[in-house]
Length: 404
Image (tube, rainbow, N blue to C red; front, side, top):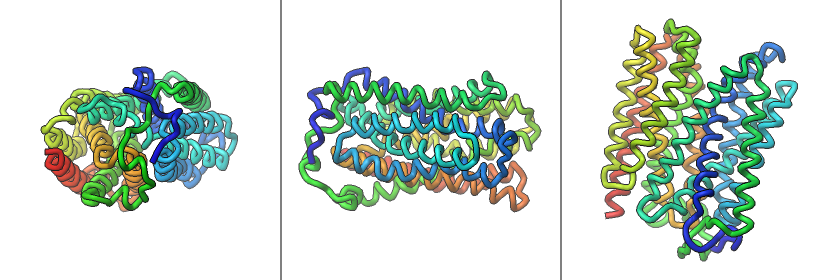
């Protein structure tokens, strides 16, 4: 199935495209945590109750779920760069509208629209990076791309500290930059300086969604990547949403909890950076084994920590382990699918992950409402980590066997 010629070109993508993709990954990390940083600042003045805040927190995730499902499918037909540029521009506009909101309803609607745009961008961002990487370096390219996510997460924490009680500037910053990146992407697309797909038999015919996901020998890898994405996003979003609250309940000061959150992102960045080159080798399964094995150990240790400094160190390593699992899964997903169907495959995997991201905070709330202590919430996440790890290691070994 052919893409539009304006989205295709001869040769590899220019470095500018790679940097724009990394910028989008940073923006994703910023958006993941901006709601949690901003909400305490507007909830009181706007008179928002916990139910409204819950809808606000969930709105972008629901939008991202639908955006991921359809964004990849549309891009496989209309062109990767076109859909990516439009999606990034759209979530930038929606973020600015969030900063202009004056009541709970407007906040919820604009956050849903932000998620919809981000969801349309994410699978195409991953597929584009993989498709334009140098031969044999596709997985590490996606892993390096994911290094931008913890940078964005740390950035919003720092921006929140600088902004004081102000919350609107956080959404203005998170909107203006995507608009600029979207315009830049569209400019590159218009002058044909990037390609979004390769010549492949799958490109020359309209493969159905089910065939793309489960045809040939793709059924088992697809199910494994779905299961692991779902389980790891439960863990990631439970930690992102509840870590400051859990640490406060365990005796950490607000400053110590903030430092722990920064350490979590810093550990994620370094671990993703270090592990990326291994993902294109036969030792990729070892990355999965180490990262997924470390998560249960670190969760248990953090649940029993007494000294805040030790908790900050553990948060650093926990961030490294959890975000490495995400980097690993994002890198392993595009090679499962033929060129030209990567948007569908990656979009479906991202969507399953977002279902997990919805379940994670709810799972933490369920445990706490059942009178579980903060440490028991962390321990209660360990079985999920074991399931995610088993699926990811099986996926890595299967892909290694398939590639010879």
